[in-house]
Length: 456
Image (cartoon, one colour):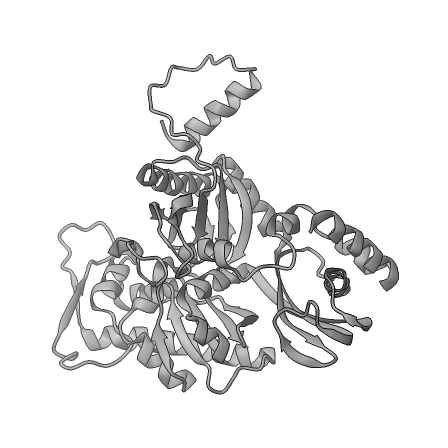
């Protein structure tokens, strides 16, 4: 019995008061294990699921051991948005079911990562008076409340509230201001939001797979948590997650995430360019790209021939044969354009990027040969290929850059960075944007303070 059938049957039994009139099921049931963490990555090319049992936590080196991995070809999802609810729910259920079978557990809730195409980041600043006394938890709450009072994003749902930095009397770079003495406490807060309709569609789709959404995580943040070293976050780094439908960037400085950006161009666009240029099928173009594709020139590429299946159903048609240099001539301009557009978008955002900040590439499309070298040329910065290093013992198929976001969701759940308000509270007790748009600052702060007292 599949997950969808299994969960639906359980719900039907509950509604009927425990009377089951359906056919008997002899499939062994796996007990729900408390303390497990499951991540779900809603990508445009694949849907992946990682499951970690309670004994998978390795606090000594901040690593994890994943007990179950499942992934299927993505269906019904484009750039993180749901375009076919039934197809997407079925694919989600299949991915989770495969991970459950490997881990020999059953999960009820998942933490979902969504591509940056559906998210946006905003920075807000707040300052409160201290009266020349040590900073207390109440002062932190007042600063957070003052920052949240500025969050006015109609038709968008907040998914992250991340502190960028604290300051006491103008002295920045404070990690934990509690017990420090000063006259003024400052806070810089990064707010990551998602379109309200996209949020609701994801919630409904996961519910159709009979799962609970425990949190929604921005994929650029999750990928960065898995791929970046602590030194890179401190010294400054840009984690570029190259997915199928979009390319996202998470910018870190002084150990904190300071900006998230996205470009709606990804690996699928390279595949489409190859299919058009060679007059082949999308499946044939993907295979040629994977086996022979490169973004830089190579020796003997003019004499090395690659073959691709022709379009149509003519069984007698000969395969398309072109020099490998033609393939490179299709791939390189698209990848270079993607990096150039992302570079200009980061410049236009106004975010201050450390001159010595390096770049870490992750995501499935980053595995294409020559992408790193091309990134070095475009950004003029050191570039390396990143993958989830703190998740040892993964099979080769799930240990590459394509699974960084899936691993990063679990790593962030255990080791941070933490939101100033718990994820579940953000999702279930969010502030009303209508109220913040129509009321004065005083009443807003009062309501936010009441909300924080109830939910923190």
